Length: 370
Image (cartoon, rainbow, N blue to C red):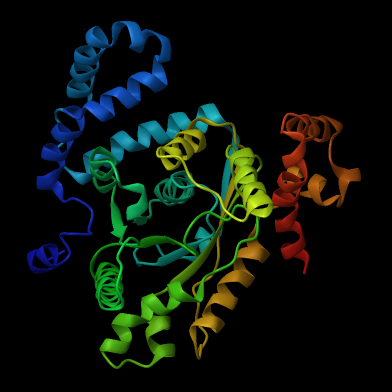
């Protein structure tokens, strides 16, 4: 991307090559980052021997990351972690639809949203496997309250969606800036991944927010480009990511249950970070990423675009045995061990949350067949 654009988008864009090493140093020197790693990997030892483990951990990261000086090098390091995650937390990873896309084109991948970190990671892994360029990832600033988290995300090709902005004028300025960045990125050098909605679909109901589409068009409207023409130019591709087992299913159900019972749910300070960790290390079973076809119709408004994205996401969603068992459909064709495993998973959930978790797994079947 030209230097003028780098300066223009410096507040939201991913880091460039020159910024990688300074960011790595900030992360390694962050007490919060080192404490977080120690408490996760060595919860008991860190309390007694933290003063010994901290310098050792810093030396380890310096050894592993000290010579990384480019985005490409960082992507290779991340790729090793993703491969390990797939090997250790999935029984199978598959994808479909990339044969209908072109590896030399840039696309705006609009994806359903089940997991904060894993959705774009699995999309990227499928693209990487087929020699497509990996995407730039849209991430809400609500997840970046810790400076080290922001550094880690922006080192890994993430750009910032400013959700915490208040005031109509500031919100419009922020939306215009984001819309401009997405357009510039697609025109020049990178595909984009963005979730179809703000926040994860906690009930298994994947629904595109028309507000996301309106944000895309802010830049087109500014240039007086007709809506249908601008939407077509973005190369929007709907993406369905489906997990046989959602590592955060019980956490999501707890939130839905609390809202149903008391009308509200208050997150704890580190809940988003905990969800990211749970999504990464939790068992997922079979994961499938289905890429749809680029939107090519002459759409009149954001609602029509959102509806077409939803249709493709529902149609292409890979239904796992867990989905079919929860929806009580085609169960006769499912092996007994799969039925037993899913029932055991549900029984391990708090009794008051079991119906909510079942609906979470059943909803994709109902939308797929409706």
